Image 1 (cartoon, rainbow, N blue to C red):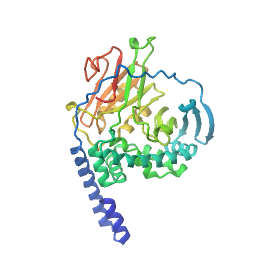
Image 2 (tube, rainbow, N blue to C red):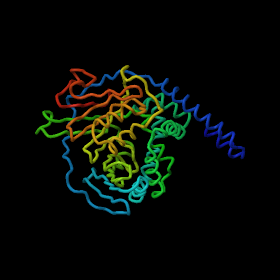
Image 3 (cartoon, rainbow, N blue to C red):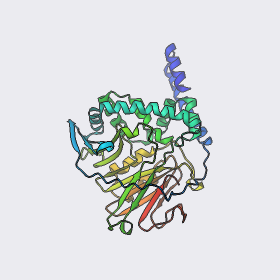
Image 4 (tube, rainbow, N blue to C red):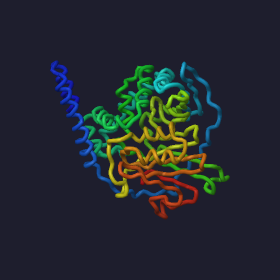
Length: 378
């Protein structure tokens, strides 16, 4: 409604300062109203899943060969790693947030544009399918709301609801990517809001001591248990950041994601910190309330990588954050050999180790010494 009115009046040449203020007030009211309506339409349920004892294990070897250098620009280098169908790009960037974004755009210009445009088309199609109940990672209530207002409006409203809680360096980096690659900035910004509306299913684990074969220090992993029909599988990228020392932009870290993606769902830092997350489609009452007014979870996870030194720093950051949706986060500290999972929502931040891990079920989620793990959901 807001977008239509603004476009309509601009065409008539009747937008003055007073009306612009009215439009801004209207937009604020729409954000609040639509957030309430969205969550009123999203009903939770119980998860009845259980592990499949006949599931095929992943015995793929860890790829350890050195990456191959491809090309370089002023603030970045591009490498390629892996083999056969498992090839992925490694982008190493350094400098200010804008410079690091600009280098990514220079190095991955063609791929960035392809990924952004194909992902947008894919998301629009997924919304329609979600309304029919054929896509599980977008709640039906959210899909109907998005269909009513339009995907671009829905994500712009989400951006408006989260902007004041997010560091300016995220926008600076995205602008650098778009300035160098020619990709559309608003589309890239919208794509980074999609996690706040969806419910992806993933798995994660932290293991140490007696839980590892040779008693090695902390091992942490995350599996993106998502569909394979979208464009994600075609644009994998590991981005290694070295912010300018002394600039206040943190320390070196590595982000595992896709071309042009700057939020974090998996990664590690030079401080031996690691992060991961999984979506929660079936929360119980212990999760409390959700909200769209807060920092996007992909941004708070990246802040942990970029700025935090110990697991206590991360715990403090999560506790004091303006949190949003239902999730389970994972944070590991290799220096201390510790891993915590986090029951995460707007009103709850509850931390688990191997001694108090929840939910507790001796059939499908027993407690295991020196192990913290979650699979697919709560």
